[in-house]
Length: 84
Image (cartoon, rainbow, N blue to C red):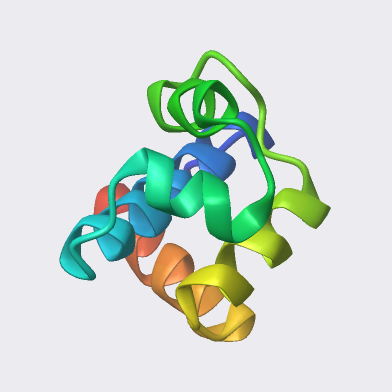
């Protein structure tokens, strides 16, 4: 069984959140405004230069109107598909 690090798991979650942001047609600036994060924080999260914290994930999910548990489920599915 392949082990995945928490950093890799967070990277999958960030990828899913970025994908959702783009799907909704939102820029990093738009998302920053909705979350009260800086645009550079959004950029640093999406580029992997900043580690995702749980409160940031919840805030991003709320701003994108995406269920937190849905993102976790999608991340788990992606990870399982990577490890096969």
